[in-house]
Image 1 (cartoon, rainbow, N blue to C red):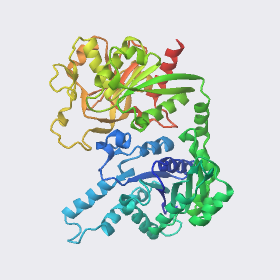
Image 2: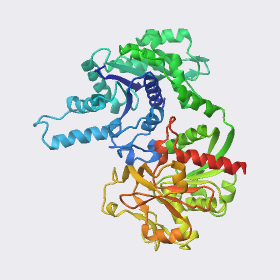
Image 3: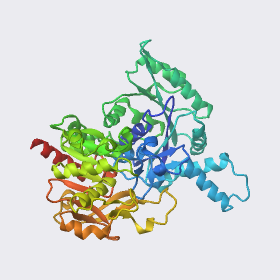
Length: 537
């Protein structure tokens, strides 16, 4: 098969319907049928990447191996497909315009007036086809962010229209995801919002090939017939996407609805084999039939918005299923923790995770949390800032440096146990300038980290500016803190642990980014196992 096929996923009626989950579920089914599949996300906002966005605005910023700061939907793509994404899988309007403006400055348009059509749309089309032209994929699924009818989405919709025309029939299709709301007063599902959404799409010159309808109630045969007739699609192409107890049910629900079959038929592709979802369904079985239940405290400062820690929450689902354990994640806002109330607030927890983050707010609460976990032998995992808090806590309460701190929080601290990397000190631009992407780490033999990973060399993804200050390493190691993971090229400390504690480990990287259904992350798996042991005691 030489021609890469393209599937475009658009959304209508309202945002947050789950385009990313539908795209990932379809990709999973196509992959399970033997097709090499990838997904990319085009986002209509003008930020160059999500790296400078507040988590409250946009949820977590996901990081790929090659150091791209991307939309959190790429996390879903990786978790479902178990295939790494890259810089090419996420494009924003900001990135598109930046590229076009740079070309204009270099004189590449030979004095032409630079316009949305054709210059911006050409740039978008080129990026939409990048992954397809690599020869690595049979099918590329492209999720268009936002909702049809939004002003900012127009250039993307126009680019899709042009691309469908250029690719020709059977090489590109459009899946339109809409809402079919239930009106309790009338006691019925309403199709009108979907009809309007499809009409808006058609006004832009695009006909939906498949309708995926988000709904709280089953779509009757009559309703499907009505949608098919009014929205100009075949009846089998009206797919119901009913609310599920977990996002990991969605591939099976889409399989029952025949989404993959309809898509392949529209693309003129054979069904090959029936989807092999054996491993996926084993995971689901363990997830739904736990033998234990534990409470893990997620201590952070963005806890009001679940999407801020999306990858961490999903990593607990993978690790929980692996341990046949239901993990209740208890969100604890670090800003409201202090020495007086900490024991009361954390008393029912079987394990504690101190979350990543930036800035000064809620820091003292995180440090108190680490102390509580360390002194009471509660399984502890610190990620990124959480690891740094563990270092500060140890310096204050074990080494006796009461004012120990990170220079991020207090530039004039007498004991900067966490400080800015030399190469970060002269940087003025905030976007894309942190230590990003996959970095090597060497693990010391016979340490907890070494046992967890079962190897001495690992690669993990980073997203931070501040580092463990090596000047304090010897003193800390003498008092019982072990630097068990070191970056072989820079000598920077990546992993710390306290061997006298049942399970106390902090990592400077983000293990949650690499946890997938097929490969739950070993750190989370071991942490959950330690929490189960703690509870059983």
